[in-house]
Length: 295
Image 1 (cartoon, rainbow, N blue to C red):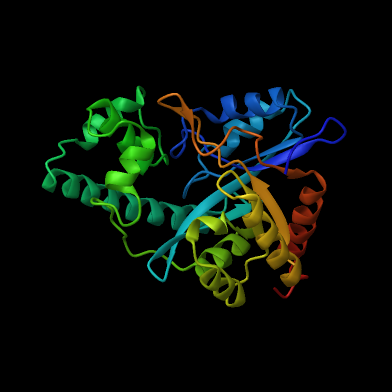
Image 2 (image 1 turned 90 degrees about the vertical axis):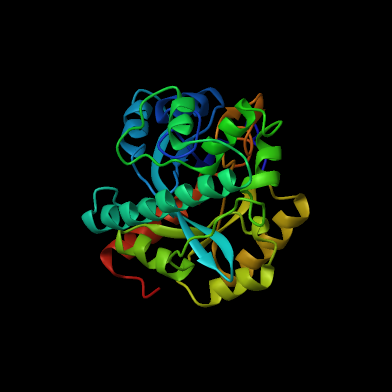
């Protein structure tokens, strides 16, 4: 969905250094302000470590910063990501669960690096962390894009896309798929933290039958129709699915910052939804928190 001068919009999918983004949470908020957005959600992978900084950074400006997360799950041998909005980021059960997910990610990272070494690609976790150019903060997580940076820096790949295609993407030579929770589990976790669960970027999964089956058997309340990797045809198809199922229609850039001169997945604010979407999300969040909804 494109921005116009008549109405302000929200980017509901952005990443910071708390997971695999290039910018601090504060820098992402500043970019959102400069882009004229009315709201930005911080949705780092399996962590809410960047939310407080982002909220503080937004206070001097006329912008809403939404507490969010993107939870990694596994269904039918595919990675499925579930976004959570307006959740309680201080909920101790949620924080413990996210810590467990990051531990799974850590074990996966060790195996990916071993697979790379088996292929004659010599990179270490120490090099990955050094490539960050800063200390790894508590509750931050290392992701595949961080490894891709080192693969490019050492000449094993020409850019991020090449690194993923050769080594890190699903089905590539060093790819590892660890045991994960289901999408239905993630939706329950988000609701138990008084948040609203939304399926992220369904077009990436390449299996609409699986998408529909997950929606059938979970308490997911929204669908990310607008995403940097969705074609106009994808957007129309998922809009129809969301409307047929009475799901909240969301969207966001999935902005990770710039790597090797390229923005990944898309520029902040490049995909967005009207501010009225936030009203729907907040209304459902209130219903979940008060126990009014039976979903």
